[in-house]
Image (cartoon, rainbow, N blue to C red; front, side, top):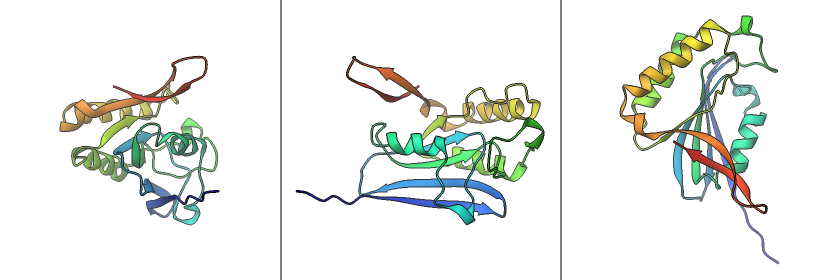
Length: 164
């Protein structure tokens, strides 16, 4: 019988009801680092151990994706208990600047776009997505942009891959 211990470390950068970054690191696992950009957070400083479905899916596949660290940032920084309506979403200049600074200083981090097509009829969301993609295309990180895709290699194996 064997025993194995592995630790997932969570760090949160937040101010009040706004979360700017959630960092997940698998201690002792060697792999790549990534910045994942989503839509809105569900974690703040008061509930650092909470894991939403996006984070759970990501954590379950970090090793499979070859990642030992993921810095999760969102187009919106305000924390919601459940999916917000479009009228609840507001532009946060400080948050957007935080994301752009992270992108511009990302070094060898992979950038994963994970906000999908949610709120595609919302003008603010579309403007944020457009401005983010323009900032990335003008940065050194433009060649390291990925999306997560599901693949089926055979009847017995399917998994997640990072796709450029």
